[in-house]
Length: 232
Image (cartoon, rainbow, N blue to C red; front, side, top):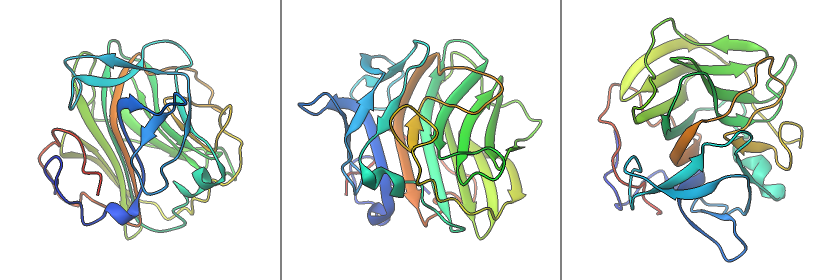
């Protein structure tokens, strides 16, 4: 289920990244409210929009090559899931359909140790070890605010769109994206990709990006989150 905005999150100690996309630090980094409080290298900005989850602000990724990349040695731990459970989730709004990167961690090519969450046209995709995990059910559309979540529970990958299960399959790959091999500065990137045969960019906004390590937050149909995620 979903914990209402600004209330206590019992899984907060597992939140390795939390970007509300509504404020920056004095050094210009997007504020990370996750447990690591990471700094970021920014190729995106904050915009005022009616499609934001809260505060009328969200991350502006309308330009090609826009991204936010957590930096520092601790960044390698954000998506260091091993074979365990996880949740990668965000809200997304695109002005046109196409190849739309969401979150990339490590090298997701053959023999890699990372993964890539993205949208291909109208289909959410989870790519790992050069394999695309996706359904044939179109569920993500332009000019619509979508909540998308990628979860793993006991070795089963699930993709959720607006609270509905879109795809499920066994997937037991181990994820340990510790190298600086997928982006310009970091082992993790929001809104950017490399090592893929098709290039693309968000072409819209991203908001409320949250990664939870060791926990699958959604295991049945749920109410789409509203407002900002809790900071504790």
